[in-house]
Length: 129
Image 1: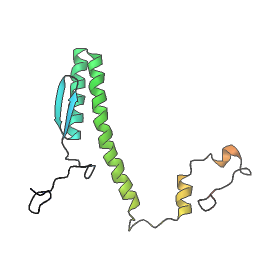
Image 2: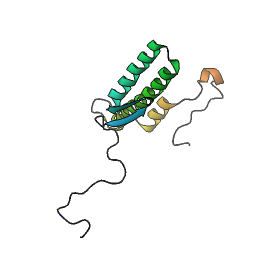
Image 3: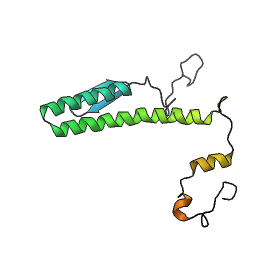
Image 4: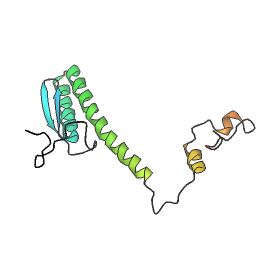
């Protein structure tokens, strides 16, 4: 039998596809429970379980559930950050294009001249560096 014959269905066996598919189903093996669903569903379920554990007075189990919920919240946040990054890279028709100098000034995290003194502060641009 030949491998890769035409007419056979190709399977993606290596790596990840996409990355931030919000409808992706996860299997989560948490403490004393197994949950299956999207990241949003799993996060909400762990928060509900944490509230139940707090109501029973089990602080350790509550914290464990909250840590699991935090993991899935970080996944959700990474999707939002990726969308923001993509939106920032796309030029907007409404917003005027900014030069590198303007972007560098906006992103400058240096100390303000009121702290270091106006005569000692030097403006560094991307062209100088």
